[in-house]
Amino acid sequence: MAVFNVELKKVVDDSYEIELGYELYDRLVEDIKGGLVGNIRKFAVVTDDIVEPLYAAPIRERLENAGYFVKVFTIKNGEKSKIRATKEYIEDAMLDSGFRRDCCIIAVGGGVVTDLAGFTAGTFGRGVPFINYATTLLAAADASVGGKTAVDTPLATNLIGLFNQPEKVYIDINAWRTLPRRQLCSGMAETIKHACMADREFFDFLSENLEKIYAFDKDACEHAAQCNCRIKYSVVMKDERESGLREILNLGHTVGRAIETVSGYRLLHGEAVSIGLAAQAHLSRRLGYMTDDEVSKVEELLKRAGLPVLIPDYIDREELVKKLYTDKKVRDGKLRFVLQKGIGDVVCFGENSYAAPIDEQTAREIINEI
Ligand code: GLY
Image 1 (cartoon, rainbow, N blue to C red):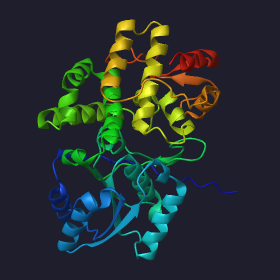
Image 2 (cartoon, protein in one colour):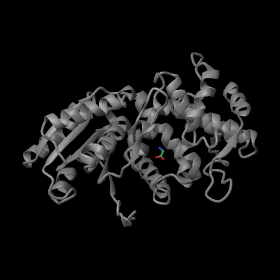
Image 3 (tube, rainbow, N blue to C red):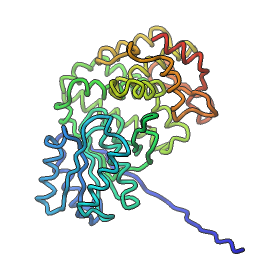
């Protein structure tokens, strides 16, 4: 028998820029003209039915005026669209429109669109480049940055996907103005999560400036957007593939992701994360990592941000306990939680270990407490 040694050592540079600003359509087209995605001339714009007329249309118009071939693929807004069937729909529609490997996908929208489009880009023609144009606070705070792309399955959210980094991320702060209030609040949950896990000053800033952000005060919005990016990329740069440190971005997500699914998506992602943040704070207090006062401060900020901190009555708590086991952090059949240490830090449980094993009964008690 012969043995062949296939040597495929690689040095990969997946670096990219995140640009924050207002109505960044012209910047996007200038970057493309300047070679952001090489010589590509075909663009598939993936968006949803709310965002399409507001932000995808101006991008399409400018790209067409610059001589590029552009088609817009529109999905229905909402988490229920983030499924394999929608990915298949986009892929088939792109193929029918003549798209092959020499194209680039531009995701214009919130987290559902950027997650779905980024995953589609990772597999279309075995991988084409993609650009994120984030129009929501949630996408700005979390989804559009860091390269996690995925779809949901009936069992749980984000179970099928890829680490796939975009060519560039544009964060259009102006677009937050057209968000329904509930969506804006949902995005604030990921923002508060960043403050809770990494930055006490940012937490105090949010406490003092929440109303200014909700009133679209320029300085307050820019500061929040910058802090989100700084905190998120500082983690992702050290641990892109979540071998340890990146788990801290999961703060509040163990209960959060489970309750989002059990609610049948009646809860928006941020609303579910908010309840998850409250749950981990209660757990953290029980284990001695947070004081009563710190837990109250976190819950107060979430409530002031228009977010829930209690599990709604329509949720079956035992079903929720079972759903916790679909969490990606589960190891050897054991639940694992990331826990806040005071405000602005997380507990480290050993070298590169940021999630603690928690027995089911303790998790159940916390779920019954909130
Ligand atoms: N949203 C969690 C992460 O990006 O790792």
